[in-house]
Amino acid sequence: MTAGVGLQRARTAIVLLVAALALMSVWIVNGRPLFYYDTAAYVKQGQAALAQLGLIHLPEAAAGDGTGGVTVAKATVDGSRSPVFSVLAGGFAAMGAIGGLLVPDLLALLLMVGLAVRVIRRTWMRGASGLRLGGLALIVASLGSLPFYVAYLMPDLLTPVLILAVAALAVFGSRMGPWELVLGYLLASFATVVHLSHLPIAILAVGAGVVLARFIGRRGWWKGPAVLVLVLLTAFAQQAAFRAVAAKAAHAEVTILPFLTARLIQDGPGQTWLAARCPDAGVATCLLWAELQKSDDPYRLTASHIVFEKGERLGSFQHLSEADRAAVSRDQITFAKSVVRAYPFAVAGAFLHNVGLQFTRVSVVMTLPFDTVVAANTSVTEAMGGPLSIGRLGWPVPWVDPLTRVQSALYAATLGFVLALVVLPGALPREMRLFVLMILAGILANAAVCGGISQPSDRYGSRVIWLLPFTAVLAGGVALRREP
Image (cartoon, rainbow, N blue to C red; front, side):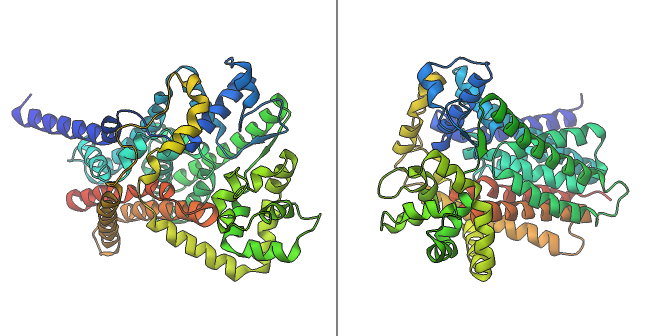
């Protein structure tokens, strides 16, 4: 081995070591994983499902609780949380190793980054090290929100994995070999089924990818889009299988919490429509409207309180009977169509406002647990093998605002950089331009689904925004080291 080769290997090893430390930095500093309100709900749902299938045994009290889970005692099953991620959470918790839930997310991220970098290097940067390029991109991305989501016991790390997978398959599919296409399909499918918001994001992103792929101009341009269509079919099949299993094993109907109904009510058009129509026995959502009239607190009309709050002053949907909750949930699409037909411009204006607001919500503050989040998780900690508790990064967190300002500057700078590379003639080859545009389209789809339809949230914005510095490194590497 020559001295030059040895030096190159040493540089690669250093970059990979720094990248590993950067990715795990929040977990290392905090001393334990980060978690959220829904962490316990995923565990409950997953363990109830595993117990229903006879794969694990739960104490009778736990099996009878089944909040959000598959239980015989309930006529409905909450389909708002992914059964795939729930089973993973329930399985790791049953083994007393809830921290293991971080492993499949991180593995999916590394495989997807490796796949994208492999194709980019092979196409335009044969003289460069793919390991160093990918490692450097992860290091720069770790200056943003990435390490917080690596340490987060939630499925949010897989949102950017989905965006990367869709972008890579749509743009680079014609350059991929059979095993690369299969890996891309597996990663995209897994990322799509682990969170309710991921399927509509995938639908929007795949739609954009199919359109852009036609402009690649290469033989076999259709391969990536064909794989993406298969990803969507897989996701729909998973939903159908979940409903079939719930019906057969638990004799229950799968319902989705009325996120869209709550969004329209908070934005105003839904309130106006219900106030003019209710009471009406033919409109199931009037049941919710009646509950909302029992308090005059304006916060009761915010989407999160409508859906989740159980208190007397702010609660509404959770005060309804199980049958009435199911009726309101089933009615949300019909209700949304009625409101859009009645007030199309008001709905469109509110949607655009919420999407714009979502782009500004990029703080990592919602990944940091505080006392009420800990309390929400106490009901399942015994099954986890230990409590979920606040680590060294817990509240109060006076450093969050300064960190957010620094990270926001990084995001703005890298967004400007990648847009300049896309616009400047000859800066990037056509396919790399399309890859960058697909990443931006994925970030936009995330904002549209989460901010425009659900609720603008720092958690939803910061989970994908690190893709900007990550993409800037990849695009910059191609611009600087591109080979003819």
